[in-house]
Amino acid sequence: MDKTERLAQISVIALAAVAVIAAMHLGEAILAPLTLALVAGVVLSPLSDFWESRGYAPVWGALVGLAATLVVVGALILAFHPIIARLVEQAPKVWSDMQEVVRGLRGLLRGLSDVTEGVADAIAPDANAAEAGTAATADDGVAMPSVADALMAAPAILSQVLIFAGSLFFFLLTRSEIYCWVSLRLSNTGGRAELAHRLRLAERNVSRYFSTITFINAGLGAITAAVLQVLGLPDAMIWGVVAFVVNFVVYLGPAVFITVLLFVGVAEFDGVLSLAPALSFLVLNAIEGQFVTPALVGRHMAVNPLLVFLALIFGLWLWGPIGGIVAIPMLLWVLVLNDAVVQPRKVATETETA
Image 1 (cartoon, helix red, strand yellow):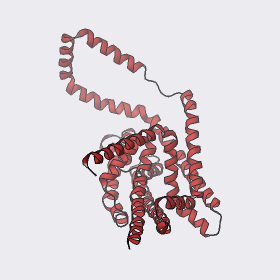
Image 2: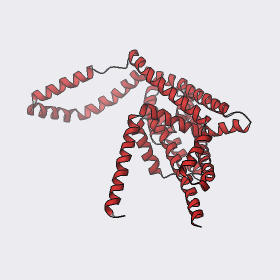
Image 3: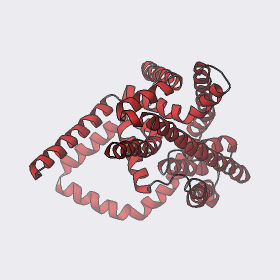
Image 4: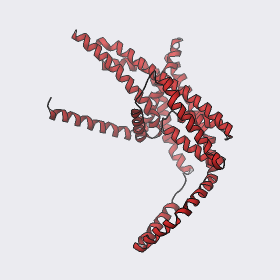
C-alpha cells in the first residue's frame, strides 16, 4: 500500500467519524436515553442473572430491574426537590451577601473605572450611549421560565423517559440473544463461543466496577452528610444524597457540588464559617479520589485519567448531562469490549495458521 492509498483511507475514516458524531448529535433525543438505558442494563445485569438463576423467566428479571431503576430515579427526584426549593428561597439572602463583597471590590476599582469611562466618552460618546441602552434592553428582556414553557417541554421529557424505560426493559430481556448475534457477526466459527463468553465477562467486569464505585460514593455521601450535620447545615442528609449522585460524574460533578455548597454556606452562615461546607467536601473528595478509589478499584480496572477526562468532555459536549453520565461507562465498556473482541480473533487466526 503506497502513501496515497493510506492517506485516502485515513481521510475516509476521518469523514466517517465526523458523520457519525454529527448523526449522534442530531439524534440526541433518541440516542441519549437509549445509550443511558444500555449502560443501566449492563450495570443491572447481575440482578437479571440472579432471578434467572432462581428459575424465573427472563421477563421477571427485566421487570425487576426496570422497576428498581424507576424507583431509584423517582426517589432522587423527590430528594432533590426540597434542595432546589431551598436554594431558590435563599437566593435573595445570598445575593445580598454577595453584593456586599462586590460593593467593597467596586470601591477599590472605582477610580480605574471612572478613568476608563471618561476615555470612552471622549472617544465615542454616541457609541458608548448606544451600548449602554442595548445592555439595559437586554437586562429588561431576561425572564424566568413560565408554566407554559414547562408544559411545552413535558412531551419531550415524557418521550425520552419512555425510550429509556422501553430500551432498558428489552435489553435486560434479550441480552443473551444480543450477545449471540454479536458473536456470530464478529468472529469465525471456531471463536463464537469464546467471544460470547468474553462479552458476558466484559459485562460482569463493568458491572462489578460500578458496584464498587456505588459503594464508595455511598460512603462518601454518608460521611458528607455527617460532617454537614455537625456543621449545622439544614437538610444534611439530603445533601449527602446529592454528594452520592454527583460523584458519579467525575471531576465536573464534585466541582459543581463544591460551588453549590459555597452558595449554601453563604446563605446559612456568616463569616469564615460560610466556607466550611465547601472546604469539608473538598477534603473528603480529595481523600476519596486519591486514596480510597485507587485502593479499591485500581487493582481491578485502571483507566488513564486523560481518557476519562476526554470522554467526559466529549459526552458533555455531545449530549449534555446525559452524555456526562454515560461517558465513563461507555469508555469502560469500549476498553473491555476491545479486549473481548481482539483476543478471540487472535485465537482463531492462530488455529487456522496451525
